[in-house]
Image (cartoon, rainbow, N blue to C red; front, side, top):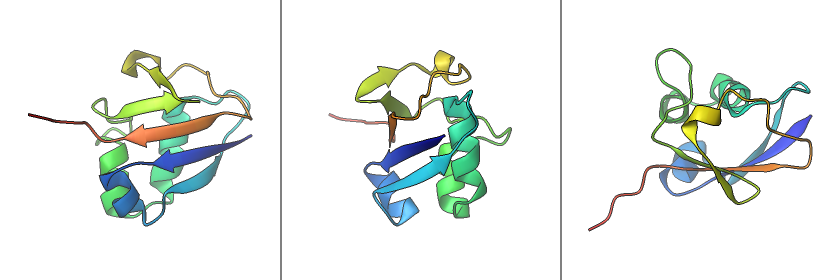
Amino acid sequence: MKIKVFFEAQLRQAAGTDSTVVELDDAGSIQHAFSALAASASDDLANRLVDAAGLPQRSLLVFINDQPVSADRFSDPILKETDTLSILPPIAGG
């Protein structure tokens, strides 16, 4: 299945684009999507997406179809063919 991925803020700059499409198997999880993205990404983007073990960075904000997804669901097979995945870096304010 193909999932459209949107990069926001600094991730957009690191990716050099605001979106891409990632190919996943039928049991698509955010973890699988991040692994596929990191495999074809620049080192800068890959390091922002996954940690040293290849797992999604838990500090990232992730949305499926504009609905937030908690980091404890990253390994669940929750992605479907028509979904969009949005990834945002952590937000700090003051």
